[in-house]
Length: 388
Image (cartoon, rainbow, N blue to C red):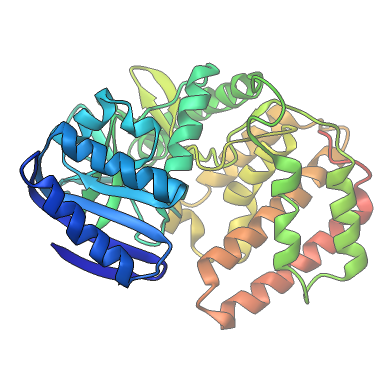
């Protein structure tokens, strides 16, 4: 029986068979390890376990009563995981199924974002490969948000399998012959007007959907206060306080906000739009949706030269066309205040993205944050409410 410690975890690697004949010896070895190591979290790794009897299940139940939420069972083979599921163990303790390994060698890259990259495995399935810095809890949260959105009527893809890809976590989706809006516009520029029209209509329809009740999803009013903390030392306190008050004074709104719905995150499946990448799902005023898009279609080139070609692969001027269509649809041409509200939210979001991309490049990070701070200070006096 192998054993090691990592941080506050003592990890025991079980293997072979745990049956009536072997369970007593297995328990004695486990108890010896526990007595000699004070780490508060007990982890069983079952990757090499091939069989478990009811006696073995009772052994896990015994340790679950002792360690409660500090017991974790990892890398459970499919056959044994099914036993845990049927017996109800998966509802009583933390049990993580062993993820199958897949290769993306030769697979077409469909898109790349801050959280990971999407590849087409075959005509029917795609896989999202998360960056190795993405914590498992964040991945699981994003998948739970996707399930919630689907239940509320948002056309979104639900992962049907979790996998490992070159040491990284991945999620597999069934998307038959799907292409992202970005891929279509990039490869078929003559369809720009058509796809932008569908895109704009979808944004309007999406925001008509609401959460079931307040508190189900993150509140965008709170999400957009976080960039203010990133601007400490760049943004004067009175400006920071003024923006924070604008956010806090907004009325509660439970309309769905995807929060990252640029064309790389919208798929075209069977002639219909389908949303992916639900990690940023929240609720709030539509200003948070269109403000986020202002970052990707208007503001990003101010701090990321070459953004249009590097992020989208679009010919020069394409994002300007998309942005102008968004403005024509969602702002009042007679009232410039709506655009001011969008810009203020857009620069808050640009702050967050700047920190994410330039966190290891202080020579670019500092000037970019100074730019965001200056623009926020310019727009604040023009805005008395952020409700769009």
